[in-house]
Image 1 (cartoon, rainbow, N blue to C red):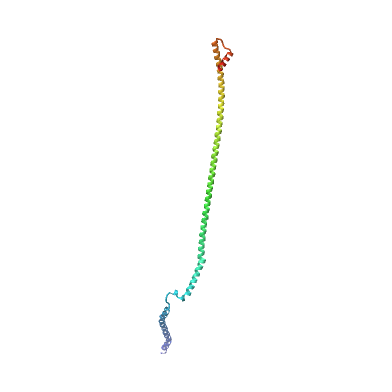
Image 2 (tube, helix red, strand yellow):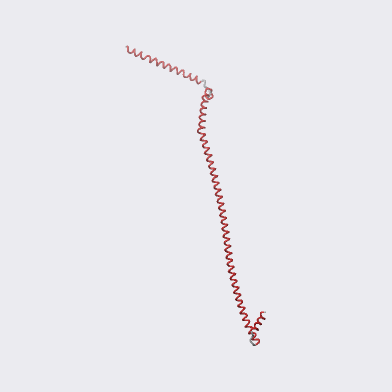
Length: 205
């Protein structure tokens, strides 16, 4: 009979402890709605416009501004500046290249114009030289032909002169014979040389 009593004594504190825990739990459940109502009662309107929240919001804004400033000054601004520098460099290079191409084209056009002028002057000089050479050759040929014709003319005139002299000699002989015949026929006696010469002189006079 002593052992059951002892077990009852051992289990007694445990039961008391459980009862106390249940009582505390019930008290907390009853107090919780009241506490939540008490905390929710003063919170009227948006929290952003309540003065007690402003220091935290300002601190967050300062931190965000500092982060954005660091990002802008250390990350975004250098990138944007680099992009603008590359764009300006690209535009400047394109403009310089265009100016260089334009200058090169102008130089090539000037060289082509100068080459055309030189070719035209050379062609004109060649034509003038050819014309002068042709004129000189034509003049030389004309002079040679004229000299040949003159020589032939002089030769013909000499030949004509010789033929004329020969013809005139023949004419004198024929005239002398004719005069001898006429005198002999008229006088019945042969004519002398003096008579024939006198008759020929009279005829020629």
